Length: 312
Image (cartoon, rainbow, N blue to C red; front, side):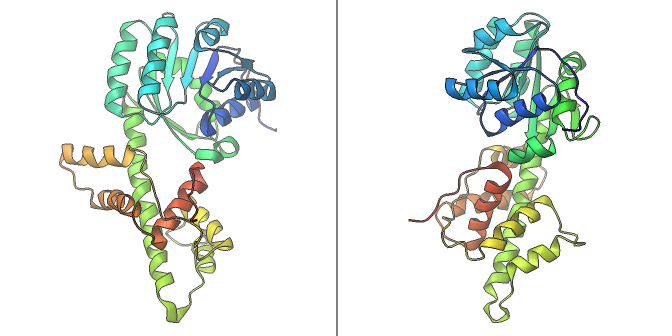
């Protein structure tokens, strides 16, 4: 590594070591931060701690006892019940001045409520929208955070290390809830961009008499075209090896943020036809076998490592 490292001390812990959490711990270690880590999989926890020369912990309480004050604990857990129950445990174990960060794709309204409860205890709270998927380790993460300036002061060094560079790739979006709200809209836009690419390529494929090379076309669009993007890059890589996708089941789950975005548009009375139809297309894919949905499934796998179902 050629990056200049910074010694933060062992005051930072990550709870949840899946595809995102584990790589975030690795990136912080590369930047000089000694992390404490915990996952329900004890073997995974021990292996990662050994890999990054971090601190393995056996429980949330054990992690809190091993971190130096003021502590920053970043949850990278599925949104919903597990995040809620973990937050409750952390609220009971944390001291005033500690900071809890929720890096799940939580609903921003839940984040607003959780922040109010946590800050009332004298504990800082930040909600963090994290984008970058499985490529964040190498490229850095795009981070959208919400919370008070006091909370930001504790978390800022870690944001700077996790981002692509110290001053690029992270944003204090506003008060609590703003981070997850910004990420929610980001994901709604993502739905629309993915759908447009997949539908357009389906039309190219459907014009049988032209026999258009989809791999060559997407590679062409990557250079100078106004539709060039990382999503296009991922699509081009998929089509280089397989232009039929016959082995892929056309099933594209939605992880929640698209629904919340559409609900928000209804609440605000702001028309969002592209994002709404993209969400509807995902619903439709779950009982279809079309080429566009197969491409969407492969794009999700490319940026987030989401599982792809193969046909029997």
